[in-house]
Image 1 (cartoon, rainbow, N blue to C red):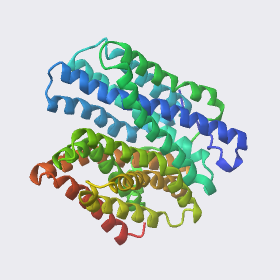
Image 2: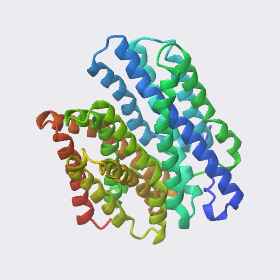
Image 3: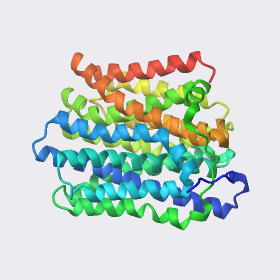
Image 4: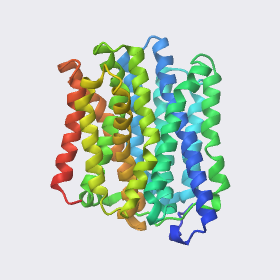
Amino acid sequence: MSGESVTALPAQLLRPGERRVSLIAILASAFASTLTFAMSTPLLSVRLAAEGHSGSTIGFNTAIEAAAILFFTLATPTLARRLGVANALYLGVAIMTAAIALLPVWNSLEGWFVLRFVMGAGIAIHWVIGEVWLNTVADHATRGRVVGLYVTTMSAAYCLGFPVLMITGTEGLLPFYLITGTVAASALPLIFARRLIPSLPVEPAAHYGALLRRQPTLMAAAVLNGVLINSVLAFFPVFADRMSVGERAGFGMLFAVALGNVLLQLPIGVLADRNDGRDGRKLLILLATLSAGGFLLLPLALSSLAVWPLLTIWGGSFGGLYTVGLAMVGRRFGSGDLAAANALFAFTYETGTLVGPILVGTSLDLWNPYGFLAAGGSACLLFLLIALTRRV
């Protein structure tokens, strides 16, 4: 089937009701797919550990999914050009649903390596095209708020994943049935809003290098966000335990970080809209500075009540890098480059999620327990060096 050739309908030509329906469909689908990811990742790790597999094996099994996401983010614009945007979205959901449904059927380490790679492909397709659609729906005046609402929705789904898994447990088929049903349900809002899914002039992905050179600070912000999100998720409880706070308190503090990511994205989006997006780079610098400050102040506040508001602001700050960055993608790239720019933004974010835990974990081994703080703070400072020495 050939791809669509019709230019995407500009957001300002959408009627208010159509814009609302589109946004609801995007948010509902993103919530369901993110909840799927938030439940499946710990579930599979726990099941593999229960079968006696080593930590490194579990790590590689998790990494194969991330590797697939990395590869398919860059391939997605070409896929959308060939299949059409709506068909590519449905394909992404179908791939995720089939892969998850087959996990308890092909219940072997080798099978899970294959299926998690396939699942990663579906996640990448759904993720990239969903964010391209989001950026076409958002009008210029409210883009930051729309993206803030989108990131809030995904963050809430992440927070909900673990409690849901606590209720279902990790044994038996029930969690797999629930996850399969959840990801399949993410297709329903897409079907409901099918006529509003835009046709995009998606170009071949041969110009990613040129896009990166045009907006290095923007893409560096995505890398930093990926580094911090995944590293804090993986190592904050370990750091807290080694600082004699205790593992249980460490998980509570991690929830405060996640709560900040949920609560502060919409205000950050409003702030991004205040000056019509002209100072997006300055806002990224502010958020990175606050993130670096969190790493600096954390050991001083860890044993006091001040740690709770600090963690909430800290989590919202480095989470806001994604909100502001994605809004800037929509503002700074035209319709011909939008899909490729969104794919590159997702690729650089995912690169950070892969590289970050390796660097932070190594730093933690070299300087226990302060290597966690040193590596995270250094990543923030490196971004600030790029942002302050580049005009874009």
